Length: 204
Image 1: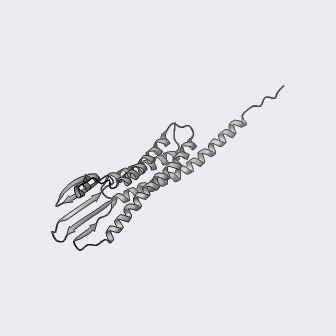
Image 2: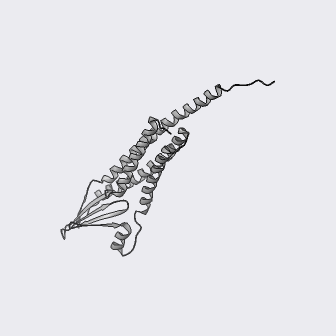
Image 3: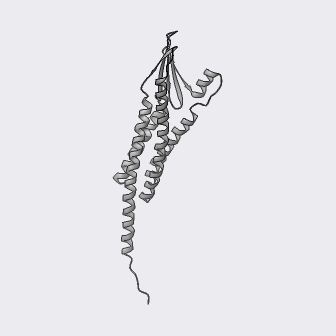
């Protein structure tokens, strides 16, 4: 089944949002902090992803899951970040589902767009919760001071990637609303036209 221009634009926006969200999920740029210990002059660099943390000490870098990292720090597993891993995965799944619905062989375009209009804002809202949380964390870290070490925060590029994905998801949602109204009006007009061609045979 062929797709009109509006439907294609919705699909493009959703897949761009999916790429941005997936990239932000796997990149260690949500929190990027560098510690310079004033007593030992050792530089400790930590870069936080949604699912892992990258730790660099003296130019030697290792990747840890949060369970491994906190076990090494505290001697036990600690399910830090689990809630936000679920949130990130939920937004990604909902965005993927919306894209699949757009290309699904459903005859009624208005029905497809109606479902997309419901799902996409939920995905964008979920991702916004994630973005706002990490913005808050970065602001708090930037205000924290210590006499024992110097903390330097670097640009949290994963937040920007996630925000760009959210923008495209919302654009796709707005376009899908327009496509929904247009396709619904066209379907109503076709039904009216079909009914106008019905020949009524008088009863004898």
